[in-house]
Length: 287
Length: 287
Image (cartoon, rainbow over all chains, first blue to last red; front, side, top):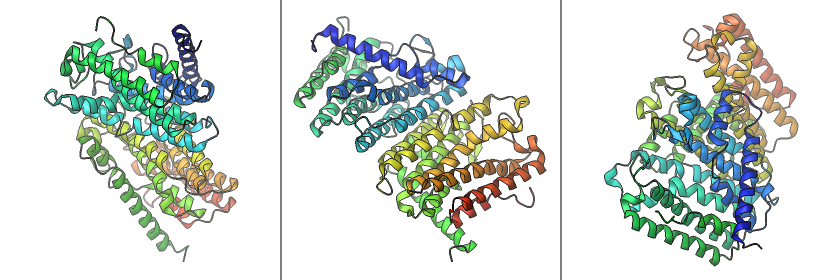
């Protein structure tokens, strides 16, 4: 049964394994320390939340996983490049990432800068070389633009800039929402929209995917801030618990998840996977 | 007259001004330090050699400058991102660039990493949003792939990795040619090929553009090494004068320029601009 929660989780696990395998393939075949550093930053451990969103959104509009896999992996490469660069001593200065030394700790700073550059470049090379899933070049171009803009100087880059440059006194709810919308939300939203676009979704479906993505993007960061509460790694100290309080952050998270599901209903997007991925962000009893 | 050398130089100057104006436009409208750092790294001073190559190659196949300008600027953004990151203390550690403090000297290391990331992302955003010059989406996709691969982990990134990781003992003529072909040659070749592709050149024309680009790319570095002789900034110490001697480097430069022009003749590419741009790399009497 399509809606059975265990089936959905199994399908998501299967998709995650396909993403992992494709990422390994994209980074194989070169034994240099440069590629070793890129593999170190990408392979294993990741939740692959963004690629799963892209695959689920595309699947909701009838496009099979194989055709979407390069785009899903490109987004994960962009996400991982941003982690490598954000961890650098001159940025957030994080020594650990996913339970192991961060890339610059393991490979040195120069190689970490270069490995990050390599992951970002490879992402666009993968997109450039990927066939249009439904032979629709225009839709591929639109998805490419969504992804590039999300990764760009008015999206993720601007968000990271705000995060390293804002002082604690400037942290309020509006600034938080703007910063998170760029730093975290932009690429998450682009993942869902790109999936819908590549699958040839009608305008209402693309709009619904975008609205779902925006709510899920904010929810993702609220969930992260609730889990990390008291140990914020954000340079600006801009975290939801500090700004909204624990109850306020939980209430906002609940609201975002409701809005995400409402967007799917409104756009008639029937996807157990997208519902399940949003559900994974629900606050835990301890939050 | 099309072949008059003064006319050609005037036309190239005019094209350079158009590139400069478009670069300023692309980086305008945001007063943050992030954009200030990006403008600092890009605006003014550059020779704009790569964008001029793209415009000249496209012009040789009848496509007007306006339609090619976004692509030409994207390549210049990629070139400038690479300079910002290569200058970082953890890479080549250069304090000066184009006669002024390098980006990290003026804005700090974190912002220089981020500004470089921003320029690379913006380049792909510009390509994504640019119309196909002749309404030919397939040709745009091919040009996009040429540019992404040149910027990528088997092109520029690999070249920079070789440059920072090779020790002086490993420097021989073959390694030099391979390294320069990636670090300098790949983006120069992609500039010429992308121009030809976007302009809808026939296969022979695209092939000639690629061959011209490869020769010009190597000539560019030989010329640079001859001019900088004795003051090499290359971390590996891999420069043409050390490896081939001054006379050997000059002879190789002459040969590259001859091959570049021969490629144009072979492909029936009639372009005073491409001839003039190659001619600018001819050794000076003092070299």
